[in-house]
Image (spheres, rainbow, N blue to C red):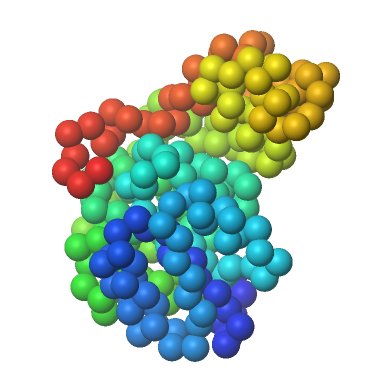
Length: 227
């Protein structure tokens, strides 16, 4: 992990202003000289990440208006694999923590944690540790979790443009529509789709959509308050 200095930058991604303020305060407690930037959505986060100056850490809420479940984490890990992403969430169930870690999260901090505990957790991650709550007991991976982790590894092989094409496939867009949205030719879109199928090790765009949709993990959050 890069040493924290006065040029380091942290990105807080949360749609609730009060909790963004709480996270900002915890970051300042841990590292007073760090620059903290806030995003209210995943879309805004990607706009900030496109800046030439990189971030050293992202703090991500799972409950965001423009994503569902682990989709925000998956997008960040795929497009910015070197950026440590810590989940800060009101969901503290062991299954959700295990899934987040299997998708490459650098840590999991409950929103119920005190500010001093938030600060300590941030310092722990920046020192290279994987932070989890003291009450968390790791669960052995089941077959479903293993399959998901393997798909995440395959997704990491996609280029940013291929990931955008895959997201549009999930929306049900046709090649012509994708070409229009991306301002490219249909031949280019077909080439992207072929590479997506190859990298995901699936035989059709329908199968790709089905397999990737399993990563949404909607059942994990169903009925959970605050999501």
